[in-house]
Structure formats: C-alpha cells, structure tokens
Amino acid sequence: MDKNRVKGAVKEASGSIKEAAGKLTGNSRLKMEGVAEKVEGKILTQVGKAKDAIRHALR
Image 1 (cartoon, rainbow, N blue to C red):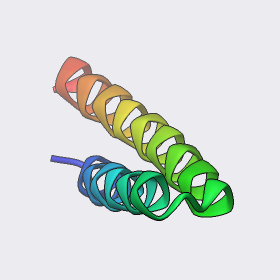
Image 2: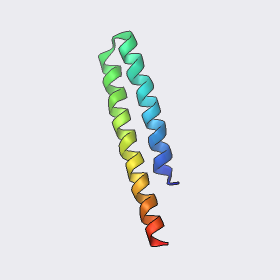
Image 3: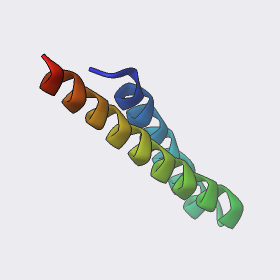
Image 4: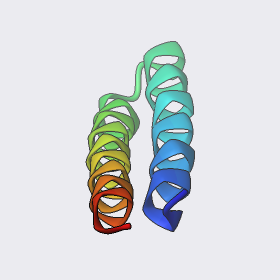
C-alpha cells in the first residue's frame, strides 16, 4: 500500500472532524478548512491508488 493512501485517509478523517466542528460552532472558516482538507485527502488517496496500480501492472 502506498504511503499516499495512508496520508490521504488521515487527511480525510481530520477534514471531516474539522468540518463537523465548524458546523457545530458556526465557524464557517473552520468548516471550509475541513472541506478543503477532505478534498486534499481524497486526491492523495487517488494518487496512492494509481501508484499501486502502476506497481502491480509492472510486476
């Protein structure tokens, strides 16, 4: 498993927490930071999946 997949999963989880905290407190900036972090995490996860697929195809 590529390290980008792990980093992506962590980013998605922390983004979800930030987004929820922003919703609860009414802090729109924190909510938007959480959304952005979730998107970044999803991108990292996809990059990791692509790297894994390439490694698998080359074997």
